[in-house]
Image (cartoon, rainbow over all chains, first blue to last red; front, top):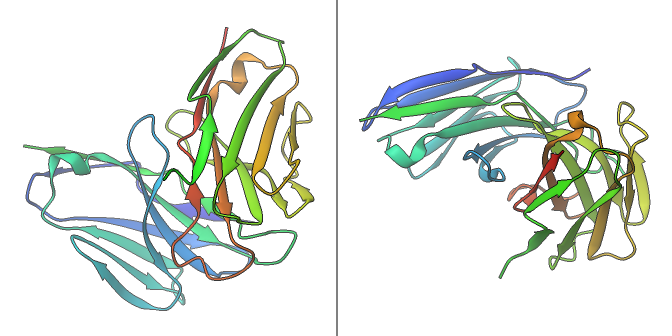
Length: 114
Length: 115
């Protein structure tokens, strides 16, 4: 089966750093994604990790450890506009029947306070 | 330059009245997906098309059907909407089985209200 866990909610102060953890247990692994989703809108792509290590992209970084089934998304220099839900998603098996199917975690709602 | 377009953005339908949501793409991606996302929950995959091949998730209710008449268009039909079907419906596309470095491409979603 597929199981992806992330905290439900986090609060941080503008200008600070927040780390959102994600643990997963999936049948097959072909990559882990982080998406940002503002209320009432579609998810937007933030990052993709397939190899162990840290991927840095501006204020956002994502880390993956395949052996531990663990990832985190690091948001630096928080801005008010970063208040949103952050979804961890894993691509499991990859074949014609599965396509590139993503299984999503429940999302972490981040609230940035002034 | 919208790449995955969902219409309408907001849809209100009556309990039990069939409704169709549409998705079109200009990316020429051969895989298209429909996800259901209820408030404060994770998106849940309903089904996907790999080219013309339809792949249904095991727990998708029979009330939900899909059609893909060509590469560019995919439709979600809800035969008899219930109050529990109120949700955001997300269409997404991907290219073959290749690298997803840039992830799925999601449409803007259709928010369905059932009255």
